[in-house]
Length: 368
Image (cartoon, rainbow, N blue to C red):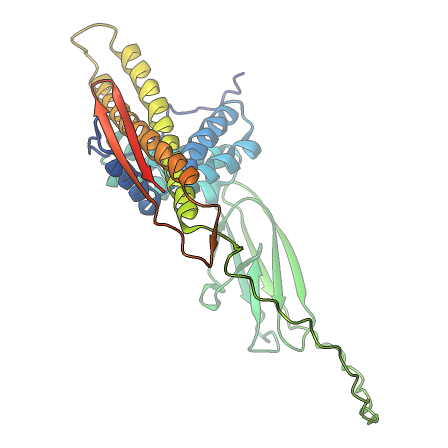
């Protein structure tokens, strides 16, 4: 379905890390990579959800469904910021008639494009910024000459606080209805509404003096009452100690370690799945751009190299995740179910990763 709204061919491409994880990478290195990913930026789940939201938002934008598209694009950029997402979000706000919001977002997109050295995006952002500046509408909030009646007041516009330094200054706003709330201790709250038109409209709201709240009646002093007789409370049941030869209900530390290892391994498998899907997508795009060899399209060559890197990431993470998962399962079954007061015979478990030309595996050796 086409609505006639111009939609740029935008993607969420960001600089790709060029560290290589080969198929024979040790298990420990795969887990370290997954942990570094988790603490250095968005989680793999955030990245996957951000990509899904971007695609849905872009489809809705092409159909002209701006009210549904803009929140998805905004959430996609919040989860995993990208220059392409910012510019697509700016297009959505512009199509929805939110000129001030689109102007701000395109400014952020321009900064990202200049940082990423994308002259095509820089040109696009500057063109939209120049076009929007001619259509911006403004709202000025000021206080009446006689004042509000209190120096301890708070003013908000559409729920956002308005700084005192901004009073009397015209501020770019989206066309439509805006609500101004004024409050101060000892005064009745004041609510003002104003409709701002499109295409350079200018509106002003003057805040009048506030009305004082009516005085509340003073309650009579409380009458002293005789002290209540203390009530005897039953003593709590004595706590019975847990016999040393019985389990105390707590999970054995070894099983806790098995759960932690399993969780990290599942995370590594999830990241590997994401990079596998990404490698396929980039490879398909490279094949489409380069049907013959040598490839005449520079971007197609870049996509092919990026697909190789993504495939390497996926292979390494899958190998590490499978080895870790096998180790966690073995550790779970060889450890006691709970920690007890008696000293158990020492149990040892060793996990030896095995890497071969066809993949990776592990030997688990235990004594208990």
